[in-house]
Amino acid sequence: MASVWKHPNSPFWTACFTDLDGRRKKRSTKETNRRKAEKLAEQFEEAARKRRTFSQVRTVLQDLHREITGEELKSVTVREHVKNWLAEKKDETKPATMHFYDASSTKFLDFLGERADQEISLVTRGDLIGYRKALATTLSSTSTNHHIKCARMMFKMARRDALIAENPAEFVERVKKKGGYERRPFTQEEIRSVLAQADEEWRSMILFALYTGQRLSDVAAFTWSQVNLEKAEMRFETAKTGRRMIIPIASPLLSNLKLLRKKDAGNGPIHPRAAATLNKNYKTSTLSNQFANLLAAAGLRDKVSHKKEKDGRTGAKTGAQLSFHSLRHTAVTLLKEAGVPHAVVQELIGHDSEQMSEHYTHVGSEALKKAASALPDVTTL
Image (cartoon, rainbow, N blue to C red; front, side, top):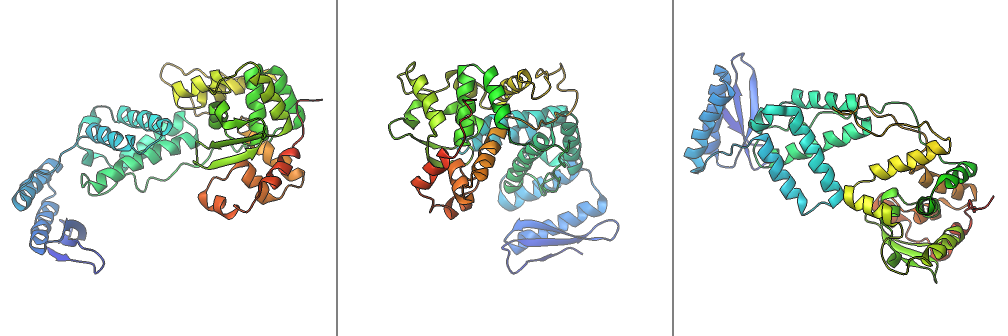
């Protein structure tokens, strides 16, 4: 016989009922009214014992919901929910991240095919496992995990809005990293070989990454308004963490900036082509591919095709030991080799977490200037 029970710390009644095999089940009714909860529990048991089809159960629940609340039970397709989720995220998400959410949700809808126009409650954990497997055959483990995380967020909102009883993506685990490679820092000789292959803008971007330790998205977006050549310092906010930075400009980078300034007196992007590419695509993949071509030209990695096949990549993308992000690692390595304290290194290149940032707020500007001056000049032989 169906009954209800309420945990002392929960406002909702839980339905307790028995299925056709005699197994005892528990499901939250999401009801604070005991009478309404008891009625739901009875309907849960009736459906479980008869093993009704989803459409039959939903008809029962719709009638019950209408009788209790006077409102229609929500019925939303996967496609409709995705549209609603993206609309909600738009006002609280950065453009680059929003671009990814849009692309990732489209990828999931494409995977479902015709089922994307069925009710979202029909999506199972098995569907999400299949989606993960499909992603892993054509993408890197990192990209696969990003898409699965996006799916989790979409279904978390569906659970919050009572469109589904359980989140089918909640316990879909991340895939393990593939390839067994580790990114490493550049040697000074390797940096000089890449600089020799670079045009003026890429040369400047490489120096920025090496002497500020910043990521490609920040380097591409830097503007002249963020630079004070007289004080030899930069003020900016990092794109990934939103951390506000004030860092000294190392001598080799300062010399580079003074040369560029003679050709550009405005306050726009320091690297116009890169900034335009970033603003157009909302991501750095095109710029990363361009840098990979520079590495190939310098003989530091094999040349690879960045073009997709008609139906996507034929296999998961593999990584390389050297990339633009390796310049950030190089900055850290060179600073540590010069004996710069760990706290100063972290403050100069920026922290990935707010806790770390707060922990090292005691680092002063003089210590940062000393650290910047400890970096070697890779522009000279």
